[in-house]
Length: 327
Ligand code: AMP
Ligand code: TRP
Image 1 (cartoon, protein in one colour):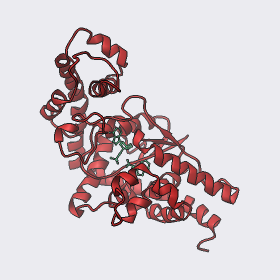
Image 2 (cartoon, helix red, strand yellow):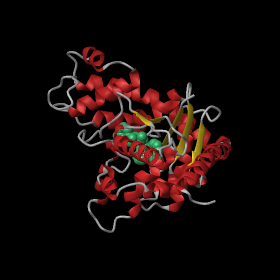
Image 3 (cartoon, protein in one colour):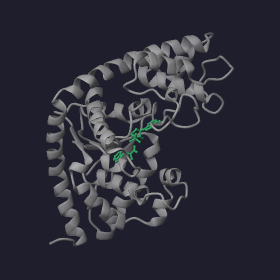
């Protein structure tokens, strides 16, 4: 069975972009893959976090994995910092990376903005992500489009190390990106991606938002003055983003949606989309609160860390042997 690995940072509430781009794939893959899903807390401290909030967010992300349908009996759910091999392999991969390639990462450039007092963790972030993936001999990595560059770097590092030792030290992973939902845009500014850190709460739909907030966010979403439900990213980014969201939730194609709303205005379209989104998010939210209260969560995380460690230890032993460290 092929192995899947993915992770989400415990920074703030997860939104529709996280769900439609990445999380939705987690559930579908667990039927015929061996899946390992991680709460990547070491990644989240690349920027300062409030320690009390961070701990709550770690549980929140793990509970959300389960609320969307990740089954702890089929898949492994664990917290990154509880498996020390992530940090260990990350250092080894940092030593196998070039400063040039790391400084070309878009996420690094966006977050550091050339500021010399940016934490070095933002710079090394992709080597930690590569360690996460390579530690589990991962075949497939389900993520949103914004992670493409990091996945490519992970592949480059795996190939570089394999070539250096003329041996298959690492499995070379593939990214898995969805057609609809791989890049959900912000509702108030459809030319930038929906983001956890956005200030306007109506720019995003949180997976824990109540029905009213979901409806309001969609009804307020930026469109255009053409009043024609048509998919055209270049000229109609707002409407196209809403069509993509509709499509991701309903399984209908963009052209099916266009014909459903032929001759109708944005009001009808938005009202229906709100309904579709509300009906899809409500069960997730309700299940989340049940799981968060129960002791299922700690049990799943304890077992998950143990299963993850068992795999990570074997890989690390092989890697150390190759590099000649330890004895
Ligand atoms: P993060 O919240 O940055 O840890 O992202 C978790 C996952 O959600 C990653 O696989 C991202 O690629 C994905 N993701 C984040 N924002 C979006 C978005 N606006 N559209 C689609 N996928 C996203
Ligand atoms: N960098 C990813 C993000 O910001 C999160 C992440 C960390 C990840 N390690 C990973 C995703 C390993 C997939 C696989 O979204």
